[in-house]
Amino acid sequence: GAVVSQHPSWVICKSGTSVKIECRSLDFQATTMFWYRQFPKQSLMLMATSNEGSKATYEQGVEKDKFLINHASLTLSTLTVTSAHPEDSSFYICSVIILGNEQFFGPGTRLTVL
Amino acid sequence: GEDVEQSLFLSVREGDSSVINCTYTDSSSTYLYWYKQEPGAGLQLLTYIFSNMDMKQDQRLTVLLNKKDKHLSLRIADTQTGDSAIYFCAESLNTGTASKLTFGTGTRLQVTL
Figure: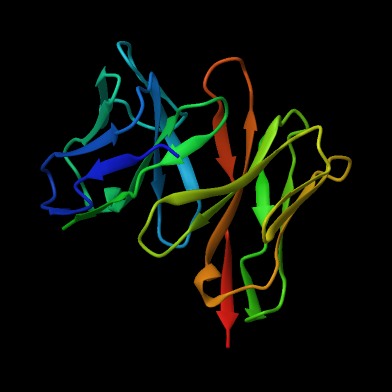
């Protein structure tokens, strides 16, 4: 299956700072990537769909100005959490659709905002 | 609307079979998936089934789909300690573009010796 990497795997930041998380598709080109967040002991919630060369599509209730998504190439999408606050602390996971309806997930990035 | 539910916890003895259940509400689902998540890690796709199928078997894994009752199950034969993880079912709608997944609440499987 496709290999999807995320960087960093773990980040701690101060409240009010911005954090950028990268998602890379290592084996395949991906026109579409998804960003999810997962709170402890909860399920994954889709935040946005990242489309290469165009604006991301955000799910209802997700602030697009707070969670900036850039999909500048077919192998890289970035999620920037701007002016992070403790309530943004979560596990952020990206996924890539390569073939048909199979989604391959990255290993996740754990964000802790102090 | 989309709502996918699972029981929260399942404990089985090593060597026994595990059955994890999932119910969904959207009858338009085209694919249904089972993912495994180990602590602190991303999701690993285990298997998936197309909505016009009733059953799919892949080595130790058997997926059963009852479309009438909107019920999906994952059976793991000869459960091993390495199977301990959280298992998520997910449904997708094929809108012709990239499919969005709606995940269940997750079932934590604990395998005891």
